[in-house]
Length: 536
Image (cartoon, rainbow, N blue to C red; front, side):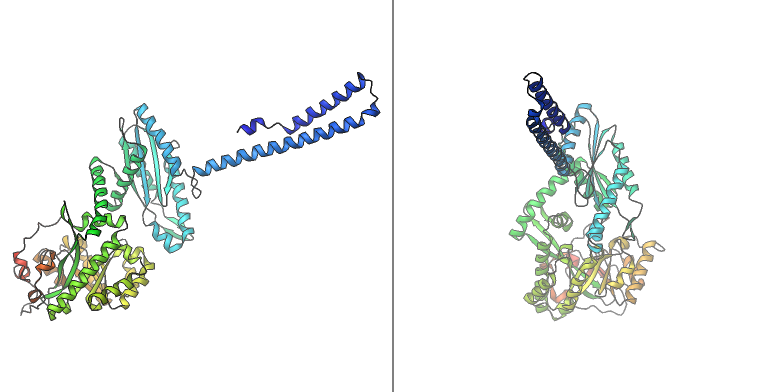
């Protein structure tokens, strides 16, 4: 900006130079007595000098103005997102630091909202990055229309946005902003002639007067609350003290996960799948557990979400796949009846997206000696629908001879019309949530009947998860579901609890189905195992 002050006006330079030349010539003529004819040379020299000075002034002025505009543009670009025009992460933290300091001085409430678009990757991958960019611009415009002029709106990165609401009177004011944003997302988005329903998950961190948290702490806490909202599909969630402890605990688990992989602390448990009508074992589902050195035996829900978020799920999944295939091959060697039992293993999203995953499965089958037809890979319905471009990987897996099953079928956001694209799938697993509320005339009962009818039409097997009562067994048999899994039959157990001579034998009887007593005694080890409490 100093160059602007130093740069003289070209017009002023020209006028000043011309006046100086005229004055100089006048003094020579009037005072010095020099004839006018002899003054042509000084006049021309002065005129040329004036023109030269003016040109120099024009150049200096243009250079000063150009440099100023260039600097302003650089400063703007350094603090704004080029795609949406919103503030970027750098500007966000600068303004949030000022807002937190101002809130402390004025003793007002400050709200930070962290937004993440739901299923953005699906649109970006299926329609291309141009469609993804257009969606981000539309979202930015809707957010700007939903917040106050005094609020700060920034694109944090990717499909994430952050809003700073300052000078608020209460926590309810922040929640009102979140609710207004969710209403703005209800209107469909038009992308290249196609209508989409965009949605978002919002995490909220609220700093009341006296809150000691810094700017990065508030963003971190709002981010953590956003993940809670996304998991619960609640639209928004407010960060709490209990969640702060969960964040600390999650960081500890994340650090311990790396050590667990190196120290081989993961073990595989096996839960039986039973063909109830034929009174025989159908197979096992391999379920990973973590023998933590200080926390004890941890279930998958305690650490697998962290493994997925940190990119470690593929490593854990490969360990489970290797151990389960090797164990099934051992049982085949110990009992001829075991060769009819499926080994069902869950496949994570990271594995499905890996183009080399089919080669890995082929290598593990060859290494373990397990026949491909005994391996059944389970993929969550939402994962399959969100990555329809990954169906080629599923077809490669099916070409190996392995079975494929869609897990938690019916709970995702897909429609049944998608199933016709799953020509490589051989089984559907009905989620426990439908089994729990399977009452006479209930909506869940109608859903199960529809799934079974559709599966029969497509020649797919149906497996019911979470079966815990005799009534559920009888209802499922009436619907035509024969393969079941749940605590009524057996809880997941280690391989050492499974006796091949007993577990793999068929139990044919004159009457169909299993009674409430005999069903818990299908396997010799089952009666001796403690039953866990019924899950809610």
